[in-house]
Image (cartoon, rainbow, N blue to C red):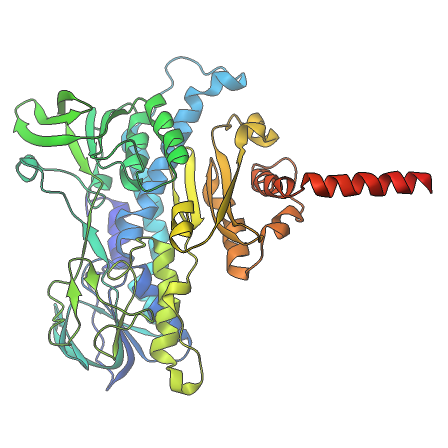
Length: 510
């Protein structure tokens, strides 16, 4: 973990303590959890809290990608970049910043490491031990379908189980680009070790990771080239939403090279040379660093899955909708088996796993079903994109007729006052009903605002509930109600109005 400073030493002391002594194994555990990322941590601590005897095995850093190389460090960097961007916009708000005001990128990254170390206590080996979990630091390998061998610094242990959970997650991977391995590159696992800002940065992949970090580094003054093989950015999102993000990136100075093809990389004395075709033009640029923001590889190697009769492929471990693998005693959760690579998805899957592994169906509880999860997500660019549920094409594929209503933020008073008018709320409603099928929000706080739709969908409540709910004024979340009011207005038909006109005329006569 670089750099070697007090913050990273504190982090490692929590998530991979050098003096850790693995416990003597119990005769048999109710649940053995392999991997201490979000899915594994939640699985272990909830199961132990219920009274189960639990072992948790981690070979690298407890907290997984989320704490060490994902959500936590990236959001700290993004927040610092926003603070600097807000200063540069200060004149719009009548605030005059004196010349010479600048930032210290090294201090920005030190702040990130300090906060990450502070948060790491929640995922620490000592904390989990205090909560009743037997924590093992070492390599885990299935000996068979009922036991795991733990290879640790102080010797091996055989850990036997009634049930096991594979929560080993996934790691960053790079596409097969000629010259890239030789030139060297950063991923989310290494970029947060930087202490100096790269003057020139190429980012490969305009998905969530690529867009978030491209914008952050561009705001700090890096010349950023964002390379995407498909058209535009955020190719899996609502196209209107993605277009707003693209324009925001361009305003921040990102140069987008989309529809990129024939990409080559070479190492030179002057830096890393990147050559790519984009929209019929050949680009040949020099950069200091290349950040790969696309691709994830499941961590299945070395687990002895064959000995446990657990089937897997290039996408990860095979599970059914109860998160049970092909070996009946063994379950899986998180990035190792999910199409949703989010911390909150891992958390939700852990809850499903616990119910199905510890409380099997013969005891009278219905199986928890991962297919029934309503999964929101958010990309933390500025503005943010958040989504939950179906897109219209998904609904049509399921035989549903979908009506879509969009309210723009430039019609919301609070967004105007905040200078954050770029965005909208878009809600998809089943035709003939008020059932909410999905929603997309583009706004500065979209990740917070999407929760209203997520709760309604989980509760089975419809658009009428939003329309009848009082929203505080002035808030940007009013845009949610405005979108639903468009649905209500659309269903106020001329025939209904004509009947009301006759009614009011009759009342006047009385």
